Image (cartoon, rainbow, N blue to C red; front, side):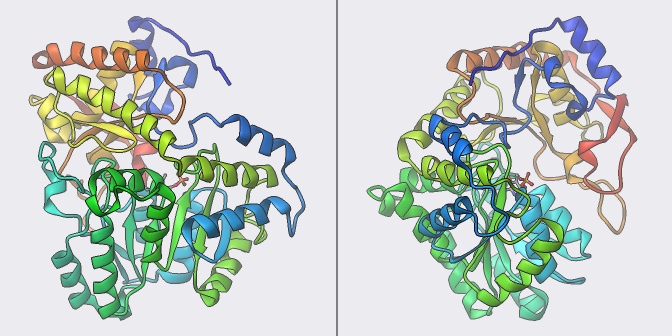
Length: 446
Ligand SMILES: *Cc1c(COP(=O)(O)O)cnc(C)c1O
């Protein structure tokens, strides 16, 4: 499919973003030229996926498309039981309804925002055990998504298996910059968790991209295929939640995959209440079929190589221009270090959001803040939480933009970088919601 994209003038954009309370989520898509808000559900499907859409089986129960998806997921991940859900957060909702209770803690590597939301909503806590190297944006480390085993063991010792329903490994790790987790680290987390009898689950949204980095960076795996690496990676887990809108290469969808039949049955009940019957979980049969094909394609080396090289191309251009970005370059996005980029804008005035607004006004490019607005308030003190990194994420949709778009993005950022000393103030919040405030926050100029 080819889609039209829309050009506009700087004057238009200045007016539009002010009208939308300086929240980039509020902009209509035709007011955006290059949309890097997210890589979630924004990619293009292949000819083979579209043909699957045509032959999807829409039976309520026992759909052939469900069986095809189940077999594919079983082959690719090794997990036996499948519950489709309408997207990743729905998978979290169903699994956590079964496992997470008030007062629990869930350790992991920088939990995704909806994941944390679903944990905190149940009056439990997410504890970040990511290695410290992840928070130094210019430090080169091949696996910045790794879990610090000492931090993890401290949590295990403090809370024990009664209070820890599972440890969650997010592959790749979004909040620390699309950074991968090594098989070695996953294995060690598994061993440690076995000692404490704590299950291990994966948040697998970008599992294929993670496997690509393992192949490229973990010597023992350089001759393995992506599918072999994926199978080994998941062999250390008890199950996974998945947002299929990422490495499923579809526009909507998600699932839970599990080994334990008892847990599958409990989750199945929640699934039926929240999502739909066991064999469709809020999706059409054709969606299940397109996802089965998407998972086959996303775990092919040639696809992953072209995707990740495109992001590397953009990142290298920015590095050439001296623009501070998270390194090494991650899997699905470029993360610009906004505190270094805009040193005059105080943390209280949201430098990453400020840079995002500047980039939109400059060139019609929409990125997203991964910083203080996203980090939200502490649920108890209601104080702003200041994360270690204040990033503007430029997420690249899969199979959507060309190299010339990457050049345009790089030059737009350079134009702002050249006049960064003129940007001295940011924004303040005029309205926010109780939870997940970044989606709907209203801002005004400071
Ligand atoms: C997108 C995402 C989710 C949530 O999935 P949705 O499909 O957006 O509901 C959870 N975890 C990670 C790592 C994600 O990237």
